[in-house]
Image (tube, rainbow, N blue to C red; front, side, top):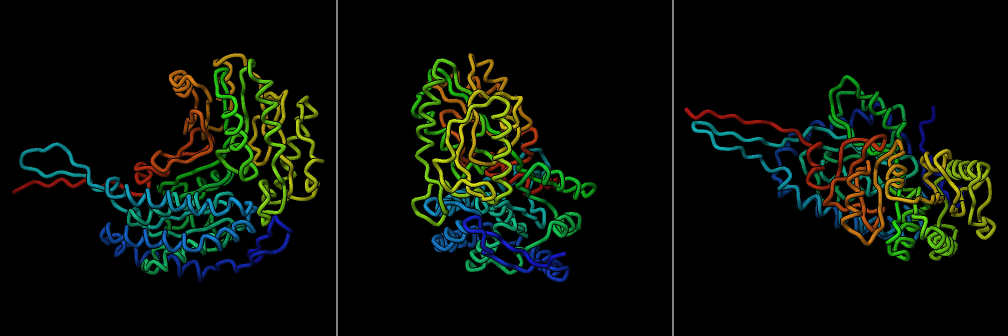
Length: 462
C-alpha cells in the first residue's frame, strides 16, 4: 500500500502536490491533541472564540491570490474565477460567527414556581470533516466554522485532489492564535479514513461527497450512536415556464449548468421548458454556450477549464454518446473546442435535446459540462419530471408569477427551492437535501443543531 499522496493537475497531467499519508502514530497524536484541548476550548468564552475565528478569516483572505493559484492547479477551476471561492468562504464564515450567540443561546422554558429550568447547547467533542475537491473551501467551512464556534475540536481530511486546501485553512486558524489541537488536518488513505470514523476518537462526521461515500460513512459509524451530516449527490432540475423572462432564464440556467465545468452538486443538470418557448430557449442557450472558451485553467481568458481528471471526462463522454445513440440531439460541435480530445480531461460543453428519462444523462449525476433540455406542456408534467429522481438537493423554477412559482415549489421534492435563480448558497438558509442527496443540514442557525447537543438543567429551589 502506498504511503504517499499525489495530486495530478488536470491542467497538464503533472504531479502538482506530493504528501506523505498520516501513519498510525501521526493519527494517534492528532487524536490525543484534539481530546486534550477540547474541554478547555469548550470552556472558552464564546466571544473569545468569535474573535479568534474572525482573525482566521482575515488571515485566510490575505492569501487569496496564492490560494486561487493553488486551487486552479489542483482541481482545474479557471483562474479568473478561483478567487471567488475565497470571497465565499469569507461571507459564509463570518455569517456563522455572527449567528453563533443566538444559535447556541440557552433555551428558556416557561417559569414554574420553585424551579429553574433551561436547556443548554453543548459541544459534541471532536468533529471529523471530510471535504471534497469541487468546492474544497466552501464545503469545508460550512461545517468547520460552526463546529469550532460551538466548542468542538475539528480534524479535517480533504480529497487527495486538493490537499493544500486543508493545509491553508489550518494555517489561517493557527496564524489567528487558535490553541494547538483545536483544528488539525490529516492526509489520509481511504482505509485510514474509515478506521478513524469507526474509532471512539470521533464524535460526529461531516461528509460531503458521493452517494457511495455516504454509504461508507453510515457503515463505518454503525453501532457507535454518533451523528453524521451527509451532503451527497444531485441531479438538479430547472423548469422554465411559458411566462418566464427568457433571456434571464437562459443566462441563469446556462451558468448554473456550466460554471466550474458542471462540477457542482447543486449545478443544473436537467432543464424542462414549456413548449411555447422551447425552441427560443434552446436557440439562445446554444448561442450562449458556444461563447465559452475551453482552455488551461491558468489562462485568464479561459471560461471553461478541464474537468478534474480524464476518467471523469470519459464518464460524461459515455453518457453523451449513449444518449445520442438513443435519439438525443447534440447542439454543440466538439470540434469548435479544439482541446476536447478523448483521453484528456478537456471536455467541450454540450447541450442535448430530444431527451427523456430513459437516458442516463437525465437520471444519473453527470458532474460535468452537459445538460439535457426537455419539452413539457404543463406545470403538472414539469413537477412530475422534476420529482422523478433519486436526488433532491435543489430545484429551480423561472416565472414572472411569483405566487404560482411558490406553489410549484411546495410540490417539488428538494432541500432548497429557487425561484428565478439557481446554484447558490445563502448562508442564512439551511443547506440540506432529501432522498439520496443526503441528510442533516449546514449553514443558517439550524446548522448549529447537529454540531451541538441539548443538555437540560432542572433546578429545584430549597
